[in-house]
Length: 133
Image (tube, rainbow, N blue to C red):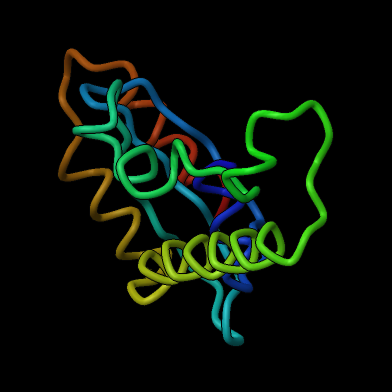
């Protein structure tokens, strides 16, 4: 699972998505959600302490304890409950980004303000946002 997939699970159509290797890592997605097209973004890190996805969902299994370490996917009632609960958490996580959709102008302003002269990733982010108007 990824940030992009959680946005899709939450009901967004992801029109563009790209990760950048800036200081902590950053991603941008152009989405269509609730009849609105705009941008969302977030940061990721190199460990579960600084990566929201890893901290919230990264090591979760969609199988019950009895089937978690088997070669075959369990299909018992407990596996279905665990899988449904995990699916609901993916959706909630994706929605947390979709509540703050930026307009094209807001996204352009944000990447223009953050641009550091020494950081190629900042320039790439700006190019990505402007290119995908």
